[in-house]
Image (cartoon, rainbow, N blue to C red; front, side, top):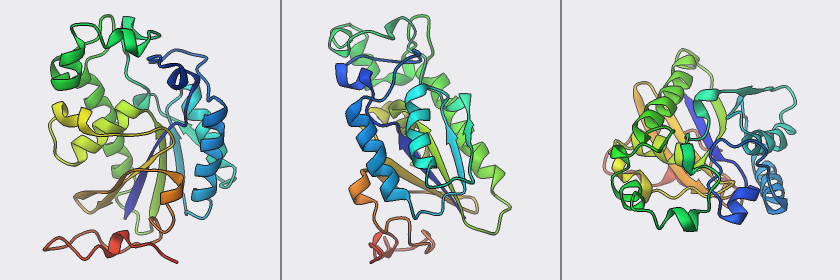
Length: 230
């Protein structure tokens, strides 16, 4: 069984100032983001993480390094397929300004039809990041032991992965909320993939990863795969 922890980077200076950072270099965690990453690290200290993978951008790597302190035997692997979407000429601009553009309605309602000027389309981003996640699951598919892979990446990336994992059309992905320093969990059992949790903050992680009961069920299940372990 393999679980992937989809971890959005903690709050960055761009998040705090309402700027669409995109792939810009030099965007770091702000003071609140540093505190968020410390709280998240504390919540994940006893989780048996077996692999650390990160977007190469600073804000993700900085978050990953804090979590990695409790896992000194693991190195952080950079994966460029998990990098932020390329927002092209929109990168570096205020979201409050961008929201007034005519394209904004399509970005929110029909993103599958949108390509950013001089940048990436949502369809390209969606294909890229979901192939990366599938590749990770395949790499661990023959392992008989439990694998817990922490993936540090970006909000839109995680939203696209969750939507795909739930069988949703890409146009529904904007309805998914992924906060900074939150954790969403995917589990692969054989050919079946499950979304175990979504957008969980550090204070809600207690016990969530301690249960290894199969997610396969009939009739909705009794909720035991989500019960806290005391």
